[in-house]
Image (cartoon, rainbow, N blue to C red):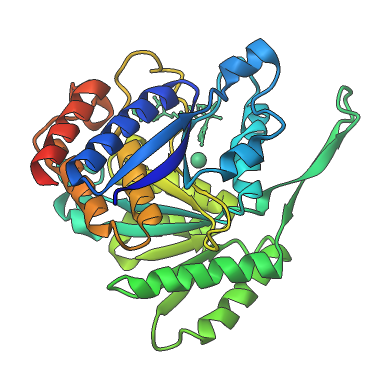
Amino acid sequence: MSKTYNIAAIPGDGIGVDITDAASEVLNTLASSHGGFSFKFTTFDWSSKAYLERGWYMPPDWEVQLKKHDAIYFGAVGWPDVPDHISLWSMILPIRNSMNQYVNVRPTRVLKGVTAPLSQIKANPKELDWIIIRENSEGEYAGQGGTTHAHGPNAIATEVAIFTRVGIERIMRFAFETAKSRPRRKLTMVTKSNAQRHGMVLWDKVFYEVAKEYEGVVEFDKMLVDAMTVRMVNKPESMDTIVATNLHADILSDLAAALAGSIGIAPSSNLDPTRSCPSMFEPIHGSAPDIAGEGIANPIGAFWSAAEMVRWVGQGSLDKTADQLMEAIENVSERGIRTRDMGGQASTKEVTDAVCKEIEAIV
Ligand code: NAI
Ligand code: MG
């Protein structure tokens, strides 16, 4: 019996639409080549464009609607006509919070055919092979704070970072388990506990508590976030799994993507490890208004995110299929079919068609 996975697709804005279309094409090709499963996509028109027309992003029953699905595939949200804090807080952040997606997994490595900008990594691409585990539910993006006297010269605004023992402990456990599952068994924890003396100190404390359970199993160390940016550039080979707060990991993962060749390649998985809600898969980039509508967005980050979605919904049964999708992506970029951000000339459609053809040959 063929299994059908119900996917809620939210293309959103700008290149989010192009890359979601491309990802669904690739996923459908993967499923039909495999023959043992299929995807049923339900597309939601939740976007900044819709918001400007009708005044809302998501309808009141959005949680009920999303929960009917096995996973969510997300493009990007944000458009110059809507303040970014409105678009982000109208869609992506409520979904992550409400769907219990407290882990955001961001793998980075230099794919075949991609040229890394730094000479050291270019010479030996295997030096960069990281998984960044981003705390996805609290920290600096908890939404606490307020503005007083907003329109006068005495305006006051606070942005309160929230760190809970429960939130820290569960992300540390996930990070240690991830590190343990990888060949190098190595975890680096990032904070800023010299200047931020409350929440970040609690992070350090809980990290060392959980680390006790992994002594002799996982090698671990701690970095301050500023020094971490230097280490990522100068000693990429010295790290494997990295765990950091919502804000720090957001920034570090863009740096990681750039070091690996382009922001257009990088994937992310917003996971509810308890599997009580659907998890959400999306490239880490935004809606890229500067290139939207040109048909030149790099779809690789979207395809890699799709591969992670296949792995997640398959619960072990589709790992090989997800690996085959990655192989197809890498074969295509190695052959030189690349978008402009990767130094090529290909369009989104050309890369997508080539990946689909490659899937048909491999799977
Ligand atoms: P961005 O990631 O959209 O773009 C940054 C730069 O990278 C641009 O020059 C863009 O052309 C390029 N780029 C990004 N993805 C690419 C791809 N797949 N192929 C080729 N080039 C690519 O970040 P930016 O400009 O800061 O944000 C634009 C909008 O997206 C804003 O409204 C922002 O709030 C939103 N945003 C949404 C995110 C989400 O939905 N998860 C994440 C990041 C930003
Ligand atoms: Mg980001």
